[in-house]
Image (cartoon, rainbow, N blue to C red; front, top):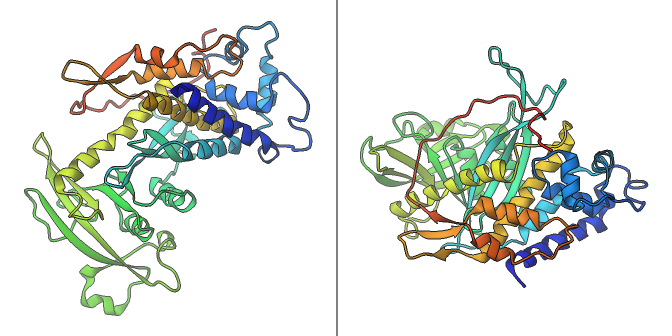
Length: 434
C-alpha cells in the first residue's frame, strides 16, 4: 500500500469512529443525521476537511465530481450547523496521536507558538473585534496556540481563543494539563514565554524546555543575575519557587522567587509549599555578532552550547508550518460568518495539514547530485493530497507519490531573511471566484 493510501485509510478509520459516536457531536441527537441525505455525517466531515478557497457552491461541485445530483448550498449550511466543532477537535486529537513522532537522543522536539487568524465576522462580536486604526474598518481575529512536532512535522495539540486579551503562556499551561505528551518531551519557545511558573510547571511534569530569554542587560528574568555582559557562557542555577514570601526568605532572597498565585496550582499546593527549580542559562553568539540567551533544563552532559543553538534554530519549523497552514491549506479563507463554523474549519485545516505532511514524510526526501538535499514541494503536495482526499472522486487516484515527487524543492538550512509584517485589513467574501 502506498503512502497516500495508508494515511488516508488511517484518517477514514478515525472518521468512521467519530461517525459511530456522532450523537456526542451533534446539536440534537434525537433528530440530527437520523435520515438518509445526500450529505451524511462522514461526508460533511470529509468535505469540510478537503475544502479549498472557493465558494460553497463550487466546493460542492468539486466534491460531487460535477454531478447533476450535487447537493445544494442550503443543504450544506443546514447540515454543518448540526455538527459541533468538538467533532473536528476530537478527530484532530485522535488522528494526530497516531502519527509517528521520531526522536533525537530519545527526546521528542516540540515547538510552541501562536498565530493570529483573521476571521470574517460581522456584527457585535466584541470579544473577537479588534481596534479601529484611523480610517481602517474594524476587523476580527482569533488566536491559535499550537504545539508542533518538529521532527514528525505535524501539529499535536492546539488551543483557540479570541485574539483580544489572549495569553499564550496560560494557553500552554492549559495544554500541558489537558493533553498527553510522551516522556522526555522537549518544548521549545520563542521570547515572550520566559517565566519561572512556566519552567516550573514543565519541570514538575519531568519534561524539558528551551526558552529564549531577553539578554541579561535588557530585562527579563535574567536581569539582576550575576552574569557576564559579554562573550558566550553556560551557567547552572537553582531557584526555589514559593507562593508566599516568608520572613525567613529575607536571609537569601536571591534563592527564592515568588510565583503569582494564578500560575502556581500546577506545581504548588497545600502540601507542596516550595518547588526547587534547576535550570541552565546559556548565551551564544550569532553570525551577525549579536547574542541570544536560552533557558533550559536539559542535561549539560547530553546537550552542549552548540547543540542548544541548533535546537533553538529548529524552532523555525513552526513558523514555516504557519505559512503553509494559512496560504497553502487556506486557513485565511472561511466559508461562514458564524464563529462555530469558523472553529470547525480551523480544526479541519489542522487535520488536513497533518494528513498532507504525513503523506509527504512517508514518501521521503530525495537527494540530487547538486549540493542541496531535495524534498517534495509542500505546496504541490498539499494540492495533490487534497484533490484525491475527496471521497466522491469517481476516477481511481493515479500514483499520488509520483505526482508529489514531480515537484521538488532544495533544503537550505542556513538560509535566512527578515520577517515582513503585513498590514492587517478586514477580509470579506468578495475574494471568491466561481
